[in-house]
Length: 223
Image (cartoon, rainbow, N blue to C red; front, side, top):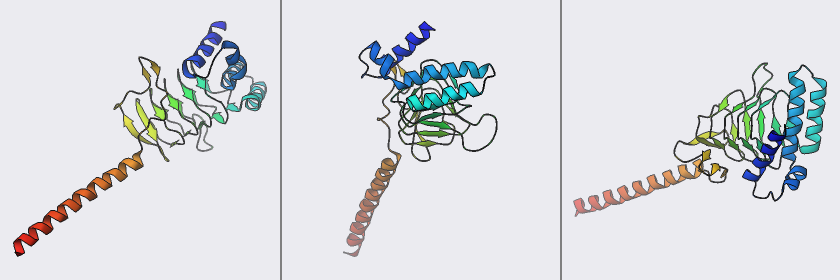
């Protein structure tokens, strides 16, 4: 247990440059408290308890702002930055070394039974306000841009942005774990709308150049 706590604290120092001391992390990081309370509720939930784990979940939400169902499956090295507004559904599966920022929802899309929440792979970063909804997999080493709404499966080593979320980068740049650790640069994302506008602008310039050339040829022919 103490080794696990030590690892949880180390994760905070690795991914948050604002962390200055162990005491600060122990007392002032609600994301860390949320993970510890979840583990207690999950332990009881797996042994057939229902009410007490849900009560711990409710207290967790009141204390930290994180609503994580005790039935969720969470791997090692989860970091929840700022914590406020994070929701993790009952059948959600989260891999190792995942980073969630404030306002993230890992939820379902209906009233169906069984697996109805997403599976998040290893080394995934889900940026502020992103919503991942449905029973599908977000592949290892992927990044979900801030404010995105992801409704379909995401292949490994991908970057997803937009509403609905679209894969805009795949195996084309270093994402996920690098030599320096997990890539947390979720602000360094391509803009698909801007790229489309630039493409249209380039096409218009080519058309204008072609029209100008045809006009010159026509004048020469007339002369």
